[in-house]
Length: 68
Image 1: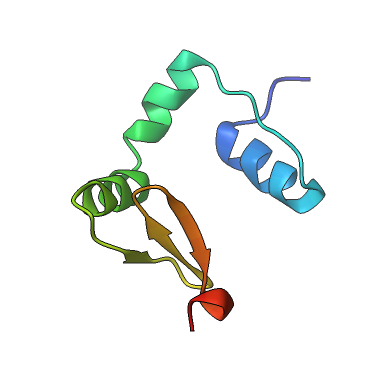
Image 2: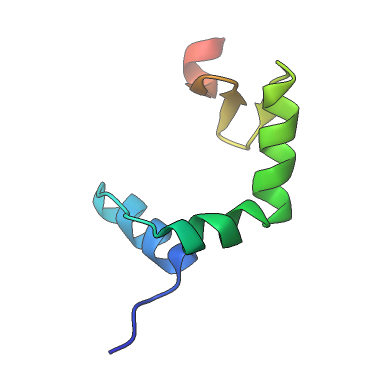
């Protein structure tokens, strides 16, 4: 069976609370994803991105419930 793409592996790992190992090539491809690039650019400039159920900062994540 062929290895699943990183998007599927990430979602499955999230469901089970697990870890995903990515190859350098997979990281390069994911860096081309416009959503990932936009959040990285925004937060690198010290802005906060609203990601739905949480906020993304330059150093990590903040649950919306804990930020109020």
